[in-house]
Length: 334
Image (cartoon, rainbow, N blue to C red):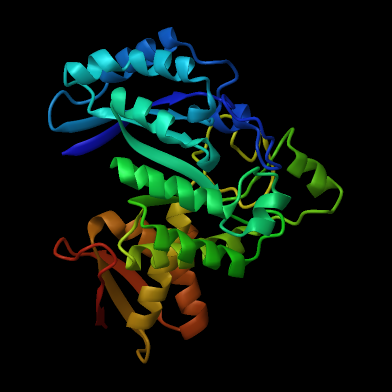
């Protein structure tokens, strides 16, 4: 069964705060408000392009703090999804919101309209980082919201960011540990990007904020990815989705932007696996991986092959083996 999202972006709706890193209209690529008619149109357009069988579809309200919108407006948007849930064309609704906009009234209303998944923008579980970023909530707010969401039986996702003002790799690791303790169903990891028309851009130009380098962001995200996976928590995205606005030639002023950031992280994991596999070997080695994993094992611009050669003197060739699983390798020497 394949899973699909129909994304409906609600830019900066419902959020009274201006987090230092945030310009939701640029991040979502949506520069106008979303109406109930837009919801119907978007669903209809996407249903035409999706498989008619062997599918699970959720309509996803992303981009703002959905539950911060007046509850009547929430209901008006979700009402347009209801006929598709009743017909079986759509399984349910997922949405993203803030931890401090979760309460019993809100969750009861979400249940009524068929919401299945709630994602919370946690960003950090370190209160000093949250305050410096002007998040407007605390780590305790996160814990309370998570407990309440769990009690209603929703699927729960938590989003964290790295490289925020005042953040450190150690703080990010601490955030990951505390997120793991909250037992979400999945997480997203977003390295902080400096976006045009944000307070963070002003901080950056004044020299008050130093963004992560791409290499540092990849190394940290790799460590976080492995922590979550070892705890049985899926990581469904690493890095912002590139758009016309989220692009080095558009609204990204500084920070570790890469159009395939998640693949860079996976490649970093593969480097460690391959380095360990060839330890003690010499000469030429063929590394076999699953066919779907070749680009990750090779690395961007053959980076893994080049690094192995530079660090060990071993010439690596990547080949395929359909019997191997994700991140499983074998090797032959010749």
